[in-house]
Image (cartoon, rainbow, N blue to C red; front, side, top):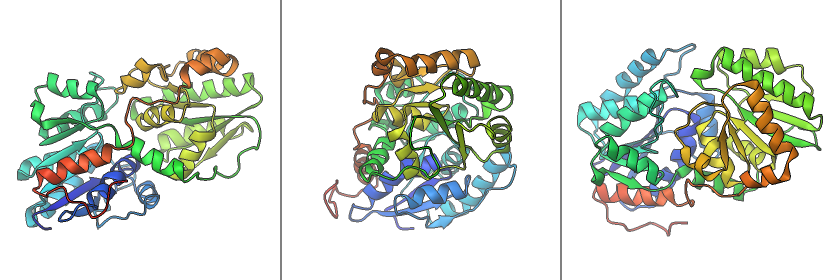
Length: 377
């Protein structure tokens, strides 16, 4: 790596989607060498997401193991990253979000005194158990970071309250909106196998704190929702974790109103968001993306680190209680007034230019003058 190398570390599909616009923006700068390192925390999902943006990894640690533990994964990431950082220290390392990959990358950089940039910094619930382990991971990353790229003013304030120096915090917007608008402009086709008529609900469910009874409660709510609305069809891309996959297929596999698929490619997911009526999710990314496309989001969690969407009225916390999920979804499906109040088509998370802002700050930090190879889109 050269003295102007920026190493972008990604491990999971959401990280790939949100880091892709930054990689693309940095590569427009003369003098910046961008290298993309994959930890492989997710395997097929990671490669699939990068392909949607025409990217592939320059370095692949390929660390995923069946039934991996958090500590085992963290140890392998540290062990894989450290020799690379020692042999050819980059000018800066960037990582996005709150996964084990991000936390381990922040620690590895701290140990080697290498500048670290945390993308999507400052998200907080105030509860280390919700979401678990993400809340802990992002606190570690934010405190270790030389540069914190906060998506919102609320995230900036959270970092300042924790004692992060103001000069290290920059409000940029969230790069997921950059990625979303890029893919949506291409008008991707809908996933195959869905009925041509009726209303579509898009659902995702994968959070570790939901494993067990909370997952079963949500799936029970989906059964009741389908029974109450015969015209409804639920598209559920099932996470490969067996804690989710086995319950989903056992409880919903025989329901003709439910389509269970493997994880969708990002273009397919965007198409599903564009065409659906409603989103049920415990995903942070969908809380950010769906409101920008005018889709109400019912958040299957008790707390969220993305309160801006809730405050704006485009997302609502409903937890995992079946009766509450059914009541909130039913209101949106039966009341045009209630639906219109949430389907505003606005997002508090950015204007599609977050990656430009981040790239400019990073280029300046590594000593590159702001001369682009081509104008920013």
